[in-house]
Length: 107
Image (cartoon, rainbow, N blue to C red; front, top):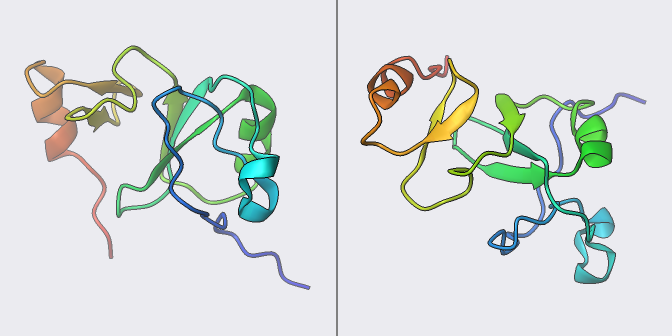
C-alpha cells in the first residue's frame, strides 16, 4: 500500500484562538484542544494550518511547503510568509519585499 505524501486537508477551522488544527476524521468532536505552537504552509495555494508539538510530528510525515514556530504575526489578516526568516511578517516590514520576491514557484 502506497502512502499518500500530501496531508489530507479537512474543513476550514476558526484559528483565531490559535488552537491546533488536528482533527481526526475531520470532526469537531475530535479537534485537538491544545494551543498551537507551529504554523504550516501546506501548499503553493497558501493553505495554512496550525499544530501543537505532538501533531507537528504527525504533519512532518507529509509533504508541505514550509513551517515555523508560532509568532506574534502568525495567522493574522494581511501578514505574509517570510521563507528566509521562517516567520510571518506585516507588509510594512523591510523583510517582506525579499520574502515576497523569493517565494517558491510551481513547475
